[in-house]
Figure (cartoon, helix red, strand yellow):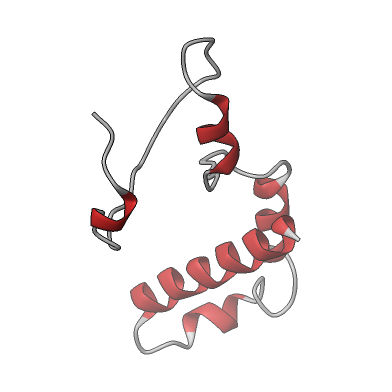
Length: 89
């Protein structure tokens, strides 16, 4: 049974996982927002290269923090985000 689009809640979202199929309408796949969970090619090497560059590779840079655990996590997140943005453009 088809529903009228005017009666659909504007906050409704459909998460769909599908492979192309003869019985599934291709237009739904073509008009949807595509999300991938695969890392970009060479992401790991770009992250390692960033960790090997200045000032990140300086031992003193990491050890002078008063909260080393949080500092390492924050640096990893920042480096990860930097690599992700650079790979996606």
